[in-house]
Image 1 (cartoon, rainbow, N blue to C red):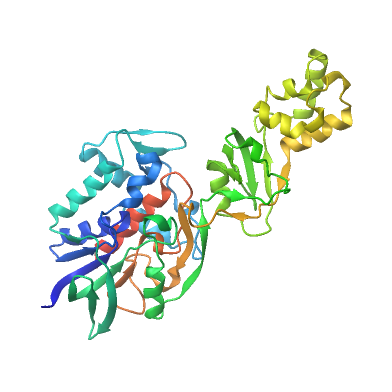
Image 2 (image 1 turned 90 degrees about the horizontal axis):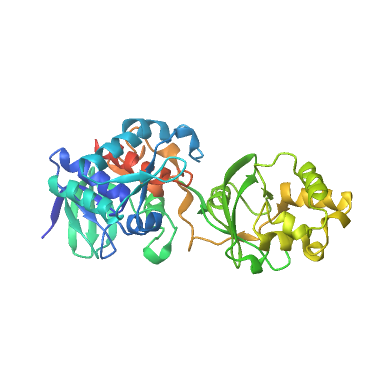
Length: 393
């Protein structure tokens, strides 16, 4: 027996559930196919289990895409404040953490339950532990084989995400479908991901694992003033994750470890006059964590600051204000929060997310070549792109 739907949404994540609920509001018969045993797995693990669901300061120009204007339409059709309104109407309390980042006061499960409730009100049929195995386009209608049976639909929305975090089921399914229908896929790479170093590289301090501080991180004409975290393999923390989305093999990362001190050399000279008998490691420990100060100073750490020459103070200033390192690589998709690149947006309608080649075929969310910064921006892209497709799919 063939199953007939108006629309099939492949992927029960943020974008897919949003899209399905919107399609259902138009009294369409819609099916969601999710390969995991539960929907919304990436939502559930996000934000330390509290889901950074959007940001107060969402703006299209903060997103990375080959097609820099593509995201404007969807983000304006369904804004961050539209989603905040949905959260508030659902009785979910939330708070701003830093830099406009909004988190649930309770747990990320509240966001998943909210989306499921919206789908239930729209009579969306959701199949979990299921997969779509074959799609054919015949006579302006899609015919497909799924793990639970065969069926057909007027439209198919691909919302299966990118390659990030394969342990929760990430695959290249969206790119395979795009290629099947002659839609180009831009090169992909991990984004919002820790950076790793080979032993001996500047910046490789395994003994500093766990040390965190606020810094200014520069990468390719961009910079971020947020925390960095030393790990046993390299560098992480919000500022490094942000920089990783702009970093490619061979690029420098420059660290200002005391961004709030403009004339650090002058400060050291003043400290030498005020605390002549103090060890320079102790003095530097007033500005950065003591373990980091010791690593930067090396054998000088136990020297009295009065005995440290001005050339040495200038060298220390350079390390503190302009520490330059070249990472070996990123930590890969296994710990990347997003995938940069994906389905070429020049082949999609920016208003509806529909393929320009195949009527009724849509791509939304992380599968598409649109990537936001850390802090709820990528969830907002999921809500906005899902909403846009849901108005017509």
